[in-house]
Length: 239
Image (cartoon, rainbow, N blue to C red; front, top):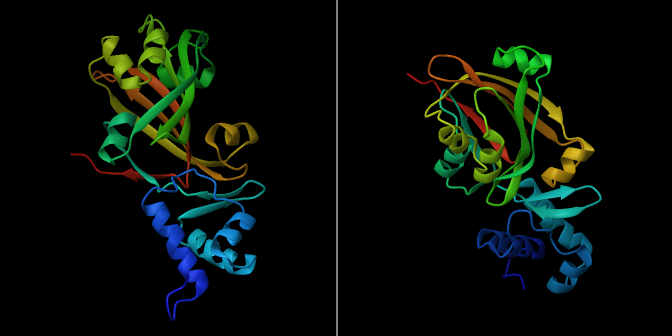
């Protein structure tokens, strides 16, 4: 199979890399087992492992302990500035944005949410939680909180539109700005791993943000858990 002078493992590596580039193997796909690939290429497992290890080192594959080897998703570049829109960010990066809404509920605000939204603790808020995707692959978990008194019926809009910007626009808020973003780090929990199709213990980038209307009144308090291997956060100065 190998060209003259080309090591067999390198030829296998090139074949798999070509299949990834041509999307015969897509991000999130699980590689066939070692036994299957060894049989396909007619090599022993040591040779195959060297080829796979090379692709892991290059970032084209990801090995998950106890789960196998998967085609890696190339990180999404996600800009954080005064104007932040998940759908617009991904569209500008050439990716297909998506959101799966898991929970939309109305409940009393906790003290942290109340402080961020400048309302009284216990005042009613809308809460929406779910999974953000790029090209149908999960990249983040989110929780967004809105003052219920200002946005009656927002729960239906959030569920139907699956876009915060679109839901707020339809609720009468034409424009809003990012007032603050706090960035920290955590690791993936068991529950988060299931939702993100990730492995427990992987690093997360956590953002806690406040968006305001054009008069500076808070309209949204959000927390997002980005899987760091799938997202690169970018901050830019805006004049």
